[in-house]
Length: 105
Image 1 (cartoon, rainbow, N blue to C red):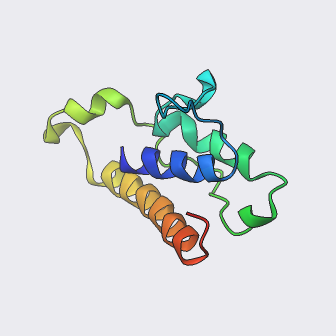
Image 2 (cartoon, one colour):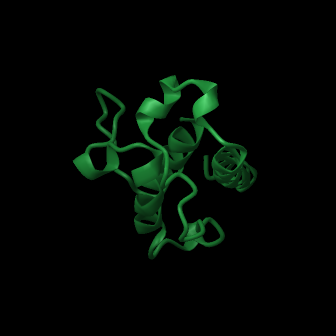
């Protein structure tokens, strides 16, 4: 969930429209979770000079994640899957830190 929120905050900075009243993305295809939003992120970087250095790897570490996983029992996760998700969250965290250092957010 943290990775999803981080991506959406950056997407907003790079042009994703947000409903001023609700604070949620205005476009339906941006109202998705981390497993889907990873690919959308790149579309907001295209053509933005300030987006240089924020690209994510094409391989989505959340491809095997579903929002219902939030409630799954710990025994349903293996170490490789968890490490992949942690690495993806770290990539997003690194970009948030970079954006803060550069004054973008």
